[in-house]
Every structure is written in structure tokens, then in C-alpha cells.
Amino acid sequence: MKKHEKLYKIWLLFLTFFKIGAFTFGGGYAMIPLIQKEVADKRKWITEKDILDIIAIAESTPGPIAVNSATFVGFKVAGFWGAFVSTLGVVLPSFVIITVIAYLLKNFSDYKGVKYAFFGIRAGVLALIVKGLVSMYKQVPKNPVSYIVMGVAFALVAFFDVSVLLVLIGCAVFGLVTSIIISRRAKNDLS
Amino acid sequence: MIYLKLFLTFFKIGLFTFGGGYAMLPLIQAEVLKNEWMTNTEIMNFVAISESTPGPFAINMATFVGTETGGIFGAFCSTLGVVMPSFIVILLVATFYEKFKKNKAVAGCMTGLRPAAIGLIASAALSLAITAFFADGVSVAVFKSVEFYISAVVCIVMTVLALKKVHPIKIITVSAVVGIICGYALNLPV
Image 1 (cartoon, each protein chain N blue to C red):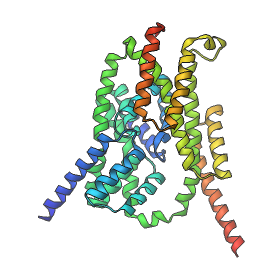
Image 2 (cartoon, rainbow over the protein chains, first blue to last red):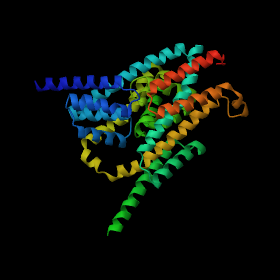
Image 3 (spheres, one colour):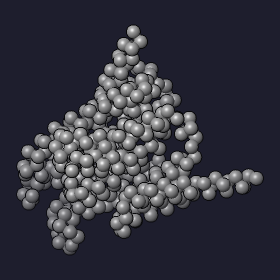
Image 4 (cartoon, each protein chain N blue to C red):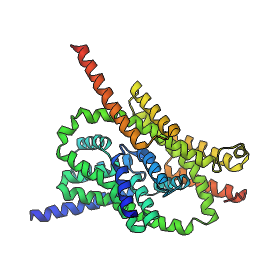
């Protein structure tokens, strides 16, 4: 009976995350309200406080936020297999849809109309990226360290062709070192 | 061995991307251009498709690049690659959650990684913009071409609309319609 219950829970997890994957556009943060509704409000598998934890964890671990939150919720609800089916569920809709679109594009991309459409779309996409940049900028703490890292990271990749990976590693180390220095200073000021 | 290469490349991308939205764009662009799997133009086309279909950007992108270079099995390898690091790390974190939450080293690294993501995305956006506006290289001739002005106007108007929180799908649809109308009306070369 108990095993039966767990299997049912795992099946529900899969269905829930499949639905979340199939109905969120843009991914990432767009997914959080849906997770909240489906997993916290409806199924009561996790609490509202867990949602905040999930966002914090997803932001400070590598990988797409959608995958991070699916794995985390799945694990909390039903252990390893819960994590496995939730991740599978959230990935599957994208995988199927994009595979189909990739094949369609191959067959239709030579049409003049399609080429014109993408000519317009490319300009529109730049606008979306700018918007994404603005909203990320709003969330980042405004202090000298942030501004220096932003500027240096931009310049190194844009003008000096330094590898993105190297810049990321460098910035992580820089952030770590400066935060240690700042917290040491705060301690010294107190004593 | 294209399948192994797809898996490893996307594993690396998954491992080194922090945060949501376009945080993955700079790494994907760097890797995909380096391996000559896609051009900047194709990347922009694909960002649009990814925004107008459901699902996380990273998964969409991995599946698409995989399909283009190695068919269905290629898509499977790249998607598995991009998902795997998150999956493993989160399983570890979920097990040692209380320790992880209080870890100052993680928080310290994040103070560098968050602003870095912004600088890197800005740099990716700049190189995409150069491709969009100066398809045949930066020269005076560009400023006489009608394509340049159409792109510039669409980009500016759409940026204003996007900042006013108009939905991405509407922005992409309107941009596509403008592209089609201008293309046929002015009989632009393709």
C-alpha cells in the first residue's frame, strides 16, 4: 500500500512538472508562480517558505532555474526518483516541441516570407535581450564591486576576446575575495 | 564524435551558468560560434523561437543546437548535458541544505557572478546587434541601406514596448509582421 502511494506521488510529480514545462514561456522566473500554484497551493507538497528557498538555491547553483527548481521540489516530495521524474517532466515538452520546430524550419527557411519575418524578428529579439538586461540590472546590488565586475566582464569579452568561462571563474573569485575582505573589516570596526 | 562533443559542451554550459533569463546566452554563443554549429544570425532567429515556445530557454537552445548538428540523438545528448550538472548539484544541495544555506563562500562567489552575468550578456547583445545591423560589415554603405533603418526603428520601438512589459510573444509577432510587410513592399534582397 505504501509503495503504491509513493508510485502515485511520483506519477503526479511527473504530470505536474510536464504541465509546468508545457505552459511557461521564457522559462526561469516565469515558472515560479506556476510552481507556487501547482505544488504549494494545490498539492501542498511544499510550503510558501520553501518557494523562497527554492528561488535562493536556484539562483546560487549552476544550471537553468527551471531544472533546479524541478529537481529540488521532486527530491523534497519523493526522493531521488521524484527528482528524476520532475526534471524529466519539465524538460520533455520543450524537447518535443523544439525537435519538431527544428525539422519544420529546415523545410521552410528558404521561403522568402519566412526570411523577411526573421529579418524583422532579429531586431525585435535585441529588444527582448535589452529588456532582460534591464530587469537583471534592477535586481543586482548597487555597489562599487558590482559596477567594477560588470564593466570589466563586459570589456574583457567584448573588446579583448577573453573566454566567457575564464571571466566567470575570475568574477566568482573576485566576489569571494572582496566579500571576505569586507566582512573582516566590519568585524575589525566592531572590536 | 559529435554526440560526445555535444554532451560535453552543454554539460560545461550547464555547469557554468548561474541565474535565469539570458544568463546562458553568452556561454552558448561562445561555444556554438567556436564549434561553428550556428552563426550569430541563426542564434538570434533561435532566441525568438525559444521565446515564443514554452519551456526554459536553456533546454530549448540545447535541443535546437543538438537537432541541427546531430539529429534527434544529438538533441538528446545536448539536453542531457545541459540538465545533468543542475540535477547532480541540486541533489547534493537538497541533502545538505542547512549547511549550504549558511555557506559564506557560496554567497561570496555570487556577489561576483551576478554582476558578471550582466556584463557578459551585454557583450553578447553587442555582438548580436552588430550582426543584425551590419550584416555585411561596418561601413558607410550600411547607412544608405534601407534594411539598416528598418532594423533600427523596429529595435527602438520594440525596446520601448518591452520595457513597458508588453509580452515577448507579441513583440516577436509584430516584429515578424513588420519584417514581412517591409520585405515584400520594398522587395528587399534576401
